Length: 449
Image (tube, rainbow, N blue to C red; front, side, top):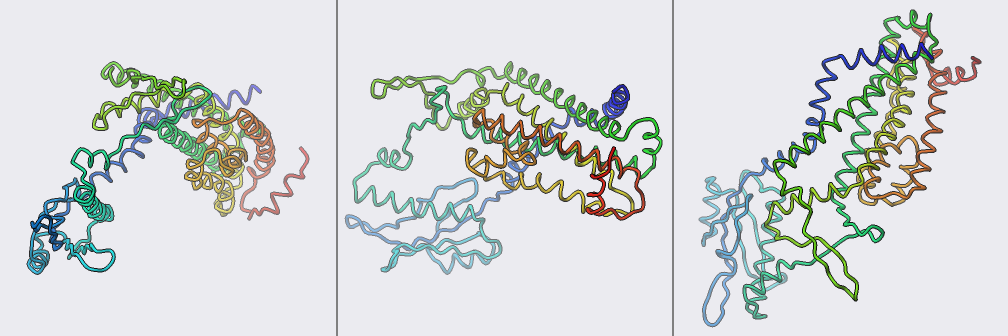
């Protein structure tokens, strides 16, 4: 046991003293956040504004007055700018000259549907979102015209009809708390992705360390004084401690950042205003509906959603599934590292280990869509995918018996993987220049200690 402690201490101090550890400790959260934030900003900034020339040929007559149905009715957006013309031939000439990005010709016919729109473009076709916005405005303008002239609605009625405000609340009947499903989705996705990333990165470190010592033949010196299983366990535990140290520092930095933001923006972190609604002699407390234009209220809603999460449960489950998933896959990666040699095709051994992790990532959308569904349940119970999938489900609420079953199976399976890895490591670490096959590995399990 003393030898394992020495190996753990040496491996741990070697890694935490590296500059890369300090860099990833402070830049890691920023890099992870950038994986979510940068694509969003790139999508926002990649949108180009298209100039559309509208040629409206839908003359209508009301009370003896002729007018066009769509002229001066389109609303400019961040993606579209509308101008108006009256001659389609001249409009198409201007399009050929590059004065406009597209020409929208609107005509009225005697067949169904009576209103037809033709979007002509020359060099660059407007984006799908731009075309969807044009199609939507075409329908909305026609609908508003019918409601005003055929049903006698005024502007106020029209505004309410087009933008009805409905108070919709999703509440947990046991606790009375609001759902905040969007926040839970984001938190579950980030937690599952972090587990995946940690398992892959730290598991790969074990495999790399084992394979480097094997190929450099340093392991021959090491196993002369310690048992192979002691060497493997020392590596696995030391790298686990490195991961926990980094995770602990990330938690501390996160709390410091939140405290700083709370001191600078106290109004954002204030509790949302409540109002009581009486329904069938029952009083239900709900968040007071704010104006949709209030950006601060939207931020406050996000903050309240984040504060509604049971972080004691989330962090404790994260630590367990991170450690359990790491020990499970680190033992497998360590075994693979012992099989790797300059003459060995390592891919045949690494692929079976990584496939369950990839499967869990592929099934992300299915689990997020239905966290209590059959697919989510079984993937959170099977030990090879449970660390990632269960962390996605935890923020949504998981029955205690499912968590207990998943944790129990994880512990049992970790013991099996450790035993299997020890058998492979003990023989494979000293085997060189031989083409190792699965049949050969099967024989190793039959060897007596």
